[in-house]
Length: 279
Ligand code: PAF
Image (cartoon, rainbow, N blue to C red; front, side, top):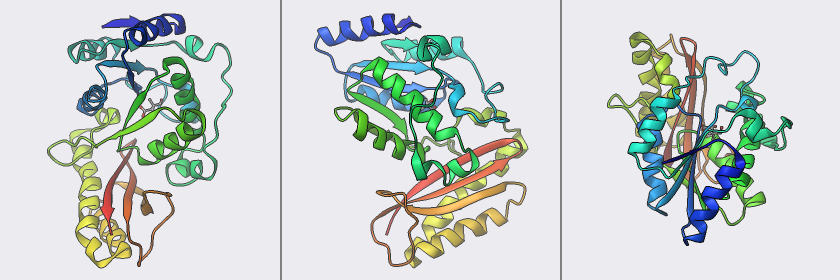
């Protein structure tokens, strides 16, 4: 595995692979890698043998008072996992390498950046789209792989790609869960054993919603909320059911693919999860 930090080194590595006739798959991450990330790499490799992974904790997508300083940074452990996973290039730019002194937010998530996760984290999606755009410009991938756990993120990235990178294929990989159902997340390491048990209610709520969905969207949402009432220690932010194609809320009578979204704060840790439900 080649480790690069500068944009020039990255371009040279990617150009060399392209000259060998290889397509490029890209997995952007913020590090603190777990099984979920490794599954994204496996998915990437299903499309092409040449895989680039970035690790960059993007200051632009953390609001004031969020966990930017505290976000886990485990770069040497991560590099070992990526070498074992036979990743071709690990790109770990510094803020200066990537932003070159221009830390302006260049992308807007619009209305979708203001609802659900965007309501709780007002600057998050504009900052996320800005770094993803920079990374796409730098890596010039043919495929980019993201986890389904961040449903609103991948929806917005698809919109960005359609507008600015039309040749790029955005691939969604399924959420990887612990045996308890808890969706894997780099932030799970902040959970105490007690809070982990509380956090497991998010996945249970989604399952309860799915089980009740035969009676329609409103029942699915209610069942998920009822499950969360059993875990009052989790500060529920929202449960919502949205159309997978538009991210608009769905109501009874809807038919098609929907996503049941949930977000809650457990201890100090904000957790999100979701489940596809077809009506
Ligand atoms: O999902 C993440 O880890 C981040 O939001 C991403 C896509 C790497 C951008 O910083």
